Length: 526
Image 1 (cartoon, one colour):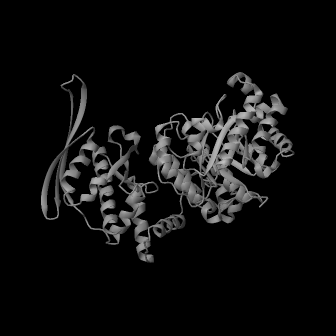
Image 2 (cartoon, rainbow, N blue to C red; image 1 turned 120 degrees about the vertical axis):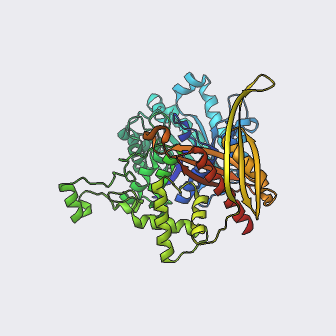
Image 3 (cartoon, rainbow, N blue to C red; image 1 turned 30 degrees about the horizontal axis):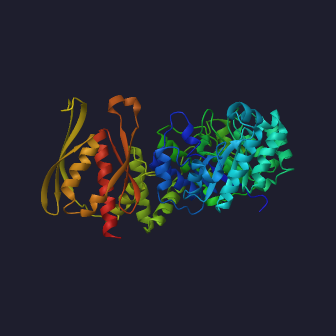
């Protein structure tokens, strides 16, 4: 389809380069699954071989429904063959069916930054793309510094992208790496490039240093490219990247271009945007286009009066098209729709009265600080308990946690936590003590000792990620604390649970309790 735009999300890599952002493997899984559900064409998972987090992420059993999992890296190194370059082969041998490699497309960068011969750089590009293609994987070439390179020496930059195209690259992506190119320049340069390389093989990767990334992407699309790269909420180093949360609805609702994201999925944009903010523990920007709380908010006076008569007077789209609402972030109908979507995935059926009751409970919980977008295991437990489908596998009587900071026999300063747990399980009273490198680890250890004789499968339960968020920072040390815990078991199944309390230990225990209950319920019903 000539007007189809292929969307390539780089949140898991470019987003990771944002100052202060450090995704865990759990974060990456949650974001990737949300992007796959949304329907983006490519999800760039990171750089396998570059760091332990990306190595673990690529080692997981990742199977997308709508998206192509993509590994990112660089061309072969100077002086090495593509077949014998360890870094390139790590990408090719990963589970990802698509491989995106970056290479210099600017003579200035080749001679000044790489300090290699310009002919060698061209060979690095063509050899690397050929190796990827020969291994039956989609090859994508990110032409780094292309726009600056084009303005510095057009002929050489064109040789770089033509080398990738002739070697069989599915996409050649023109990168505005320092974000300084303006929309009219992007349009003119891309219009020239498409004379040599078909737009159906060209993409755009824009940075936002002049606040023009979305505009530059739209200009490139108008000039002929059919592949657009960006991130959720425009996350990225320096001033960020093209904001897909703005680009997607603009393409779908304002132009004749089409994407893989249908109108129903478009309604999840607000939720996806806020999901990322929640994982990063940052407040959502209230004035973000399309998805911000104020995006369709109208102050009293002439505007409000006009909107009441006809919303189109001051609203460029119906806010519900992107999952937003007038004056409030999520309408009652949008909340119901999201709830039904999750329940269908869990094979849970509710009648209308049950649905209304569950929605009311969820809203009450959210007012207390709970958020179930990332903690879907706790969400499932809440629903099933309301339906009477889950029993208590044990009852906590009390627990006590103490911390001790001391010098050990080796003269090392250490801090140990000790938890004492009293539980009622299978008609018996059990008291156990657990030692850990923190109070949460100690509580988990004590619980295992008390429960594994009754539920042996808990031996395979692992807590793989732990995250604390302060919800009411203005209250200082009396703030409400939200804890998210990711767990896994021997089947490599991962799930996330939530606990909320003014006491961080209490919030942590509640999240652990949900994790244990979730596993035992599914063990018994598998």
